[in-house]
Image 1: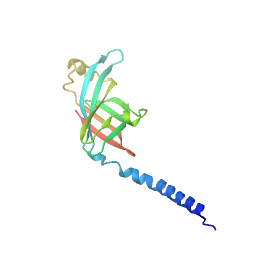
Image 2: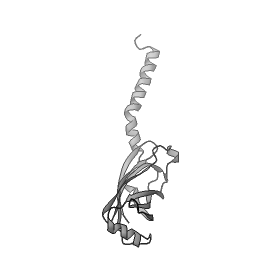
Image 3: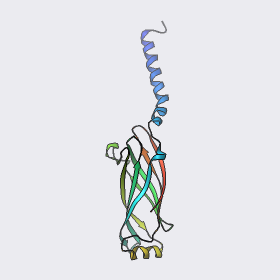
Image 4: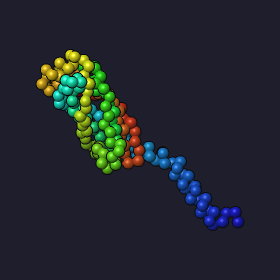
Length: 167
């Protein structure tokens, strides 16, 4: 009488729930495609002026995210450090964590997506400040570099994608 019908059902359901709890992390990691194929690059940088009061440049940075996989992805956060002529202009974040998944930027399968952010970049180097002013917003003769990481997500899983690019 120890293994009555109710106890067998309870043991069976407990085994199924326990199996799901144990196997769920494995199942979730299978759904994320190979992120080595995903590319994050600088598409362009626009100069929107210099605030003389605190030596801050207003820059509009555009990231091109190429998703050559067969699965749609999204991103919840991009952290990056922008460099101009080897000088760090600070660390910035583009964040969509508080936005529901269906409202975040979609990285559609086999397509490019563009994400942009206006940043206030402190300019401490006088030569760089002069170069920005003298280039009439064209950003010529300035070597731009970005280093960062993005949280790339699929339906059930997420992973960090590191990137480095020059423009």
